[in-house]
Length: 226
Image 1 (cartoon, one colour):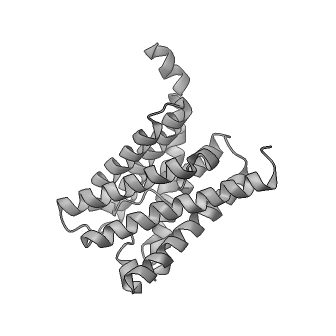
Image 2 (cartoon, one colour):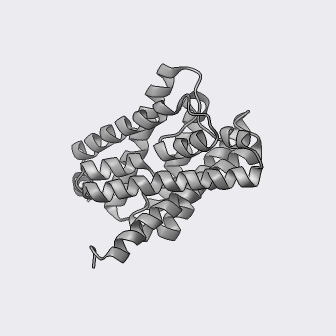
């Protein structure tokens, strides 16, 4: 049954593991190419995060819905697809998964500085805020619309959107669109000076995405196509 303790715990564990995969593989991808120094490295990092998300969706998406992102969870809560206690459980699991992933990166890379190198950062605060709000809105809107359709291509559509978001955002804001993704490397790498932007800007973007989803509901689009 939906409310059984084991089922609830499995959902939170799935969110922890999925976020672990996303942040862990994405961070290792950054270290593998030496950071976003040029176009080739940006492309590699974008696909590292996109394919990591796809892996997480495939392995535990059927358990929790594959949020792996507090911004996605906020939008789903706003849309009344989940209760507040469930949303809080997801948030705790997502931040924990990101933190554990960054600890593993620390062990693998051998230094805290290496973890800090995987943290998101910006050159201009105003640009970072605008880009994070905008790209999060696009990403979360895609998650809500593709997930609602229940189409077989939804995992690929969501993952490729994350790739596109990184391609567009890395040079301008570091491309987080996920508070947990920024939280893990920043806290473990002891580089929290710019973390605030990556917490509140994606959450604002998520609420915009929810508003757009309500304005253009999936049912309306399907009737037009039909």
